[in-house]
Image (tube, rainbow, N blue to C red; front, side, top):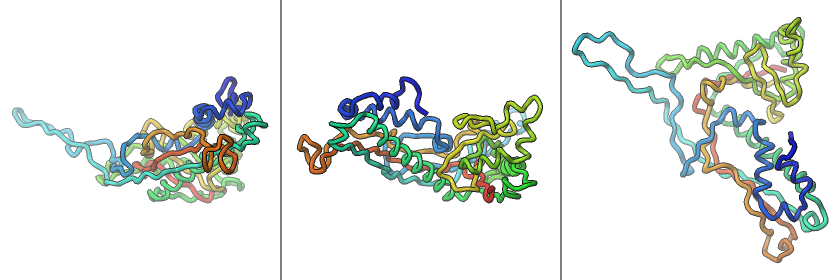
Length: 310
């Protein structure tokens, strides 16, 4: 959602010539639109690296290979090392999409034309990020939990399904049997699936009397509510109907790491197919969005996939 005095708003009122003078405005506008709108950012903490292949360990539960012990006088106090999780490797790949502006747009159009072009690219970037996050979770073989009944049918208990997922997170242990102590914090699904959750009788029954004002049905589209004072809803149209991912709250750390060579960039504007001063042989200019990255799920037991919700 654009805000007053935002970079994105500025695109509409600036001339196309001014916008093509620098790609920095384009990059700032894109970052502004993507900020706070993606489960991708909740799930994967960015970590800059200098190589395209990176080694990492899966998370192990907090603890050491030595327990606290009774120590007789003059005996050596034990010292323990943290458990190391399974070793994995991430291979960074280049993700990219271009934005093209024609000679006609540059000379006879307005900044609003480029703003509309950017909206399309932002939609593709957001979709690619969501698809990559889902693919990473699927590759990590996270726990899957079928809904007891579809949430939009009479008698379905959607909140019970969320707490069943929370129970799986609460009981998750590492290879040594130590509890991770996860607690569910987020529910990631598309709007249709989340709407079924909000309308489910078990959900609406939580918001009666003095709590009626907090009913999730009344929340604005950009203010997704808490369900049962625990589950923060994260809407994402890239997910299929009936699938919801429940994952641990942020205080337990992110589910994974986004290994990257740096933040995404928009390249400087350049003429396509040769320098003619008029946009090359296609009479167009372009700026490319480029990001070298790989998404690694370090905590596969910190997420549960609910299926058959609708």
